[in-house]
Image (cartoon, rainbow, N blue to C red; front, side, top):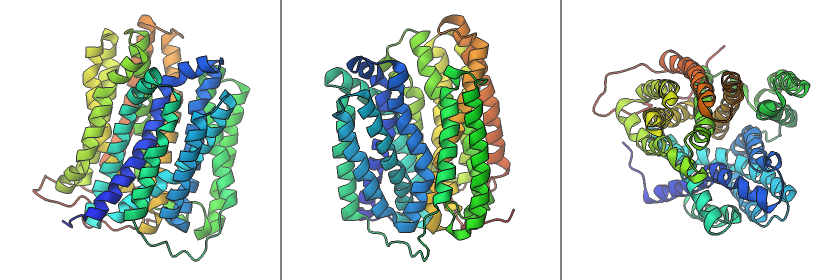
Length: 479
């Protein structure tokens, strides 16, 4: 196995810092929303856009960010994205109105969408091919750690200083990551003959995805039968058809080139991630609500209550690279997806006891599954494509996670509301949790079947040493 140099380890540390600040930013601000609402004397329907504006922008522009990184160089795109993210974090912390804060969050989302694909692309490019599994394990492990620490860091800063320090803290961390990257990570710029930007593809996919994510975000307030929801989903369908037609005409100049679209292993990996993300997003939203509304936990207490899942996710993610090197990626995909199914099922079965101890096994098994599945699936998807496409691959994979989670969350919410009769606490609320997670477990079975039978690779008996992706070469498959 190829050794990793000191400079590469330093470069990987920089990538991990950058990934941590992005992951932490997603979850840290959630616990500060009540204080932001109070400081600006506004409603929660307004302050929720402090979270939504960032998430929507980030999710929608990921594919564009990935394509730009592969075309113009991951390192310069990373620096541009980090500068945008850090500067507007400071401006967000200094915002004097909710409108200013929401506007800065939109621009922070642009910076994050440039950073994330570049982080993944540079990480995999920095590692020898026989250590590729380490890349997914490190970055996804750090993301799990950032997501887990976010509510604790955000709660502590809000209580001890101010919610504004959640934003101010991004500046030194991002600056350190950029400095170490500048010093230690030197990768050649891609040799791309045609650097024309596919504006038609960017506009159709971006507006289409905004329409879809906005529809699912507002479905709980407006109702699925509302003409606005129907209109948004219809707009999404029309624009996705237009996007597909546009991309076929653009050829290699397309935002998503044909060799990416036609790669079956990559498509199967994204499909499995879409189905698994329904469980992940539902757990992140509904289990803390159950702890607060049924078990009587505080916001910080609910964040701590998620640690059996999030800490397990982070710890297992860090180990996933070594496990994949020893046993191969395929067993980890299968075992991870199976644990996600079992974790959701355990929560569906035992949440009816209305005690925290009853759901801890489900949380832990779910964290184990997420920690095994996501890093391994990310590595499988990224390495299924040519090295020149890896930032784009990482962006599409994360977009599949966000889109799958958003769609799954919309479905979960519809089922939850129907089963709970709109209750906000008590036995009916728990009935909704049980029914929703039973459906999510069924969706995860689909992801398990894809991981077991469709994603390339065969199950082998464990060997003492076996490279995770030995013998795998990037290749496209015909339709």
